[in-house]
Amino acid sequence: MIRVNDQTVIPYGELRFLTSRSSGPGGQHVNTTDTRVTLLFDVDNSPSLTQLQKAAVKGKLARRMDKRGVLRVTSQKSRSQKINKDAAIGRFVELMQWALAPVTRRKATRVPLSAKRRRLERKKRTAGRKRDRKLPDFSGEY
Image: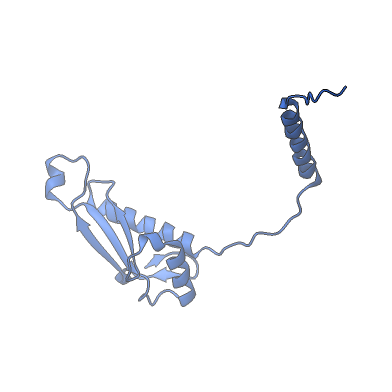
């Protein structure tokens, strides 16, 4: 079982792992072993998540999901398949915690008077600077 937060636990049976050849250094070893691990989690068909949680995950992790609603997490940092599998699970837990975290609403506050004053002073300085750049009007009257 993978504990995402206090309310959500996902059994290992809901996760699928695919292995493939990893890119990067490794010499002859990299050409013969499948060390990259891709974790697949079917969000749409998961009995562990409520409909509200599924909607939150789909909304926040949409770029990592395919059209069928399968979340994909890949790890290939190590030459060891076991280490990459553990890293993929760790990243999956981090992503799920972030996606399922409650959204805190912004509390409306007033703009401080000092900020308004600074803004107006800055506007006056800019206006004065632009006014001083203008050429004086020589229409012939003194």
